[in-house]
Image (tube, rainbow, N blue to C red; front, top):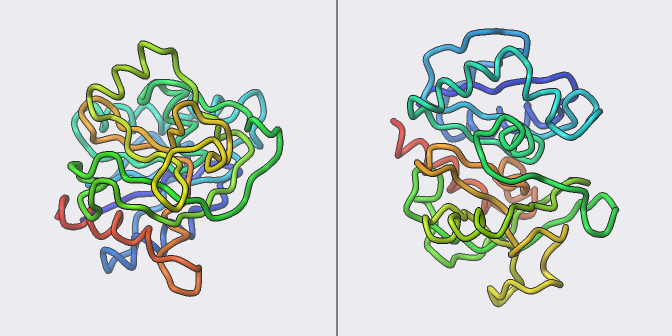
Length: 229
């Protein structure tokens, strides 16, 4: 599997993502600068976390207009897999590749800790390494992770299996106490309709080694390799 990581001014998780992809694939991903207009021939495009453009105006809003995003959108339309993590998720909503928006955390505070996720749909190239209903321990680190969409959009996401992960407690219950940011319906990650684009707020690239406290992010990357190689 060949991959590329898009780097913006203010990205800060690109090296974490690079390590995760290299561990899974055995090769370095291409690092693509946001001002570039072309991408190499790859199977996966990853948009990492961070604070693109310093989160000025609105998280991801300025990055969505970077030259490279036109090519990312074009590749996504052709079926290339696109993964957006944290700020990458925000950028994907701002470009219209995913529905909804990420708002300020309900607490109005930056949240940085491990959370528990429940896998909602395991029948995709991103989640084939998990079982439906499986609980994962993955860290979050964001101030604007409160997912919101209109009720009819949410209903479509539910009906079409586009919800990837939800925040839950240790028993798998999607409670308010288990929700770190106030996301509607405890949504932590969603797919596009064709499920070749995934955006999620938690950081699977920071849960691949035992020293990180969890290896629950590793099956996401290993599953991608199996699906796309």
